[in-house]
Image (cartoon, rainbow, N blue to C red; front, side, top):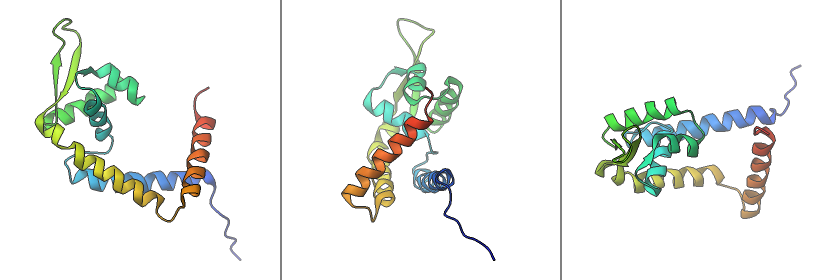
Length: 143
């Protein structure tokens, strides 16, 4: 006889993250983006001309990862990197018109994904879930 146990929370979190990323990837690919690239664009929609190191710091990812992502975004025509006029060692990142035009479609992707994620949850359940997830995030963060 086989016993069915509820999946461990860690296992559920992994499955949820994979499903979320898969759905995001499909929607973002339709816009010419890969998952994660939109996070750089979100930074630039808030503040253009920031440095690559500031993007890495804000997104909590390694500088070489940002460099590779920016190379792809640049190749796709969404961003451009320019030397700082006062310090040639510093590279600043700017949106192209094509990159600017993605803001509304990308925001719509994230709104749709958020709605899909919380479908069937009451406002109280959403607030509780958010509190619990923040607690888990705090539990797992570097201390």
